[in-house]
Structure formats: C-alpha cells, structure tokens
Length: 391
Ligand SMILES: Cc1cc2nc3c(=O)[nH]c(=O)nc-3n(C[C@H](O)[C@H](O)[C@H](O)COP(=O)(O)OP(=O)(O)OC[C@H]3O[C@@H](n4cnc5c(N)ncnc54)[C@H](O)[C@@H]3O)c2cc1C
Image (tube, rainbow, N blue to C red; front, side, top):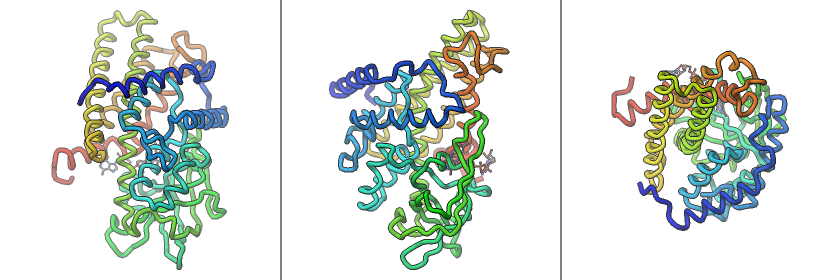
C-alpha cells in the first residue's frame, strides 16, 4: 500500500477539513445527548446527514446516477478518518449506507436502485436489517420467518429481534425462508419490506446504555410484491452474507479511525490525572498504543485488497475481532482511570464531556456481539483464513 495521498486526494482532504470546520454545529462535542434526548439526537443527525448530502459528502463511493458522489474508495476512507479526527457526527442511516445500499448496488434491479438509493442518502427513508430471530443469531441460516409465494406476492410471517432502528425505519432488508424442503442455507431469500405495513408490530428493547435503539419485530401475514425480492429467489444466503461482508468492512474502516482518536483521549485522561507516570499505567497505555497502530496498518492491508478491486474478504473478520476487543480494553482502562467517578454520569472531574467514557464503555460491550459475535469471527478465521477443518 502507498501511504502517501495523491494530490487530488490531498485537495479532497483539505476541502473536507475546511467544510467540517465551517459546518460543525456550535457546541458539538461539548454535550452528551443523553438517552432521554434520543429523539432530539436523531433529528439532529438526520439534519447533519442532509447537510453532508448537499455538500456532496454522502454516499461518496456510490455511483452518481443513484445520488452518490462517484468518489473513490480512498476518498471514502479519508472522509471517515477526518470525521473521526474532528469528532464530527457520523452520517445517520448507517444500515442503509453501509450495508443495504452497497448490496442493492451489487445485486438490486435497476428499478430498486432508482427507487431506494438516493432516499437513503438524504435520510428520507431509514432502513433496518431483519436477520436475527429469537432462536437464530449466530446460526442465522436456521431462521424460521417464512415467505410463502401467492401469485405475484409473498406473504411473510415470523419474528425478528435486536432489529436496530426498526421503530424509525421506512423499510426492512429482511432475510426469510422461502423453501423448507432443501438444506437450510438453500431455501432463503431477501426482501424489501415496507415497515409501515399494518401487519407489522414493533416493540422496543431497552439497552444497557438506557437507549432503545433496537426492537422486536413481528410479521403477521405481511404482503410483499415480487418486485421487492432482492437477488434471485432462494439465493438469499449469498445476498445476505454479501451484506454482512459490507458490514464488517464498513465497521472496520470506521472503527479504525475512531480507535486512533480514542487512544489519544485515553492518554490525555491519564495525563490529566498525573497517572501516566505510573509504570503499570504507562505499560498498559503503551501496549494499547502499539495494538492501535498495528490495527491501523492491518486495516490498510484490508483496504488495499478493496482498492485492487477485490471484494471484502474473510480477513476483515480478523481485523474486526482484534479491533472490537481493543476498543473494549481501551474503555475498560478509561473506567479504571476514572476510579469511583466511573459510576457517575455527571460531575466527574476527569471527563472531557459528562458521561462520555461511561456511555461509550457500556456501548462497547455490544461490539463483540453485533454483526457476528467474537466466537463466530474466530470460527470464520479458523475455517476461511487458516483453512482449519470445520469444528
Ligand atoms: C447493538 C446490537 C445491534 C444489533 N442490531 C441488529 C440488527 O439491526 N439486525 C439484526 O438482524 N440483528 C442485530 N443484532 C443481533 C446480532 O446480530 C446477534 O446478537 C448476533 O448475531 C448473535 O446472535 P444471538 O444474540 O442470537 O446469540 P447466539 O447466537 O445465541 O449466541 C450466544 C453465545 O453462543 C456463542 N456461539 C453461538 N454459536 C457458536 C458457535 N458455532 N461456535 C462458538 N460459539 C458460538 C456466541 O458467540 C454467543 O457468545 C444486534 C445486536 C446488537 C448487540
């Protein structure tokens, strides 16, 4: 990988820096939007996403004909790094931007691309992802929600769980069983489901952070036109896994930039307390720093693969696993440094922002579960990277 930015890339970065400086809302980064203010936070993030879109910074690497900016993947990476560096809000509608959109660009029909992609970028239509079920998380292919063909429609019934943003979503990218007579991986299909259908019930679930970002979703004979099928009938496993590969690649590229910033803040926290002088704290900080640098270069290695036109591969699992575990250890050290103040949301003398470390510590627990647990990533690395026999 060439670590130097080309001249056009440098110009892109400089323009973006100027734009962020000029457009970041006053006071951003000084107040934690607390769980009670979740709706205000969402309204703010949608507004911010629209500003990004108007300035040509949304859907950077998506084709122009679908509302994207037609920029290079490298420019997308520069964008992520600068957003992390400025601690600017990330664009809202992450499931659409990071997963569903790229999947539709790859395998959607022309009509689907024209209909859905641009409205993802403007946040006019929020998307959720309906994969996990009460009995099917890691073993996703065993899912039971079924879609039965009835003329030109499919009738969908079943239950999904942990469905992030379902309460705010216009559409769900749903994985459902369409054939029960074949091995479990072969009888699945992907659908676009209108979340305003009256046959859908959504129940929020409370998270450890106090927010209710994910939900239980019940489908009771929801009718979906055949035109809402994504990819071929019964080929949903390949389409659905392709989407997860995008998820892992997106999380890694974004996560890596955030870890560098988090590391600097952790060092600042230790300095602020004078604890950076303590040998054990120094060693732990140094170890985390070494790992965060290693993550940066491993991330660039994964990126090089993408820049060469290859799809995100299973090595993304190794990066994601190491990165998510690193984030959790960073957060744990922050809590240790805060000492008894770690229990307070307000009033810690060490906090740059009230409750930020506490919130991100609690939030980080989900990093090794969402999008495939750490154990499942280990299985993928064992089987697909190291070529070990299936366990
Ligand atoms: C913040 C958050 C947001 C989420 N958002 C969404 C969403 O929008 N849409 C969606 O569909 N899902 C979502 N999920 C669900 C997520 O994908 C699942 O939680 C995850 O896939 C694990 O499934 P599970 O919870 O059913 O756990 P299980 O699969 O029941 O696993 C339980 C434990 O057993 C271990 N285990 C299971 N199988 C194996 C194996 N073969 N080898 C070794 N260990 C194993 C797991 O690692 C885990 O520790 C979200 C989860 C979180 C935390």
